[in-house]
Length: 413
Image (cartoon, rainbow, N blue to C red; front, side, top):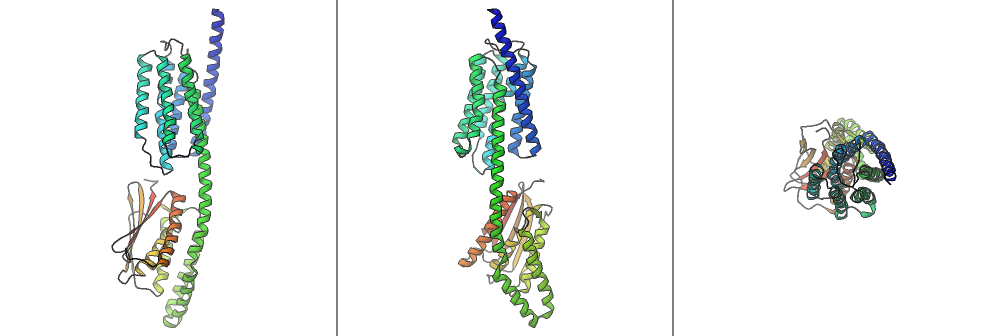
């Protein structure tokens, strides 16, 4: 009878070692893919930290001479105890990964309570591992941790249909914890956690690819809108007509006007073919061309002030120039008193902030045609900022004038 029992233990231990080594291979595969992606986000940072803890636990399991027995931890089970300490910290880090996932998708969800609860359970597990031999309660704590993960998912604002991977992934450590409660052994814990992280990671990759595809489609559609908005047939017709009149009134201004008009068209068309980011000063040059062109057209005299505290950053093409154009044509251009436009840049709270301020209309009611044209232009700017650099645009109506504020994450900062 003892021989049968011994053979059974040998088979169990061999099976466990195979499972542990398989888990190590899977964990290394996930880690290598994650590192090669070079996704330097807080979200991916929490994921890699959780994966590193799982790998630490797996290494401890590999080093263990014996695993859990039905009586709990033995003195020779030091490495298994270390493995459990590593595993106990995975759930809080995975919770932080999930909370960051919510935030990246624009969902306002405060996970402080749930993170604190997971941390307290991890502390309780550490106490149980170090000071007691009650393996049943250790695995019960594991079970509670991953039931909480599923609860966090249920109360979040994520579409359940798109969250199957989270649910399926959490089932593996739950099953491993139930197995541990039944057998008192830690054999499957590492494998369960690796399977959870693998499913979630590749689900994350699928979500990322889908998001990129959606952004490309949105950007393509936006380019068509920008093209139609930036061509301005009436503006081109009026510009050519005014340049023709300059030939009779001020011949010396004709050549500069034609050169500015040509540069305006060229830069608009070049910007429309640019699907990436460009240096800020290049976009300023584009705005300057429009300013010089506007100065020769029939309009009120205006002045442009620049106060750039930072210029060494990238910005989507056709973001600053449309705002300057709105300020000239619909801010001071439709006002009887305004005559100044101010361009500013500075760093504020982890963002590069760009402001375009005029002292024109402000809160004075605009004509419906003006509102429509400005809303189309600003909508295009918002889309390009959001898609290309996760930036934002705010339009603030002041008592005197209008303030347009662009915020771009300061990646260098």
